[in-house]
Length: 77
Image (cartoon, helix red, strand yellow):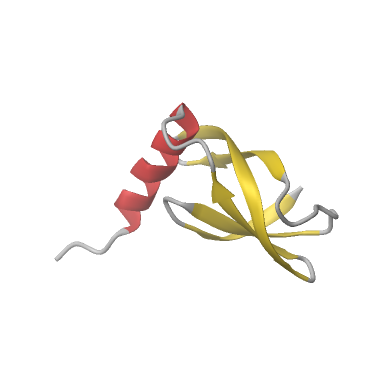
C-alpha cells in the first residue's frame, strides 16, 4: 500500500513503508479514472519512504491507460 505523489507516461513516485531494493522489478496495481492499472515497473530510486518507479511494459494495457490519463492532464494551448 502506498500513495502516488507524481505520475507521468514513463513512471511514477510513491510514498510507502515497504522495503524494495533499487533495480528490483515489481508489479504495481493502482486505480486511475480510466480504470484499474496493473503494470510492471523498475525501482529506479529510493529516498526514505519515497520510491521512483519506471514503467517497463510500454505496450501493455495498463501503460495505455496511464498514457491516456497523463495526456488528459496536459494544459490545453
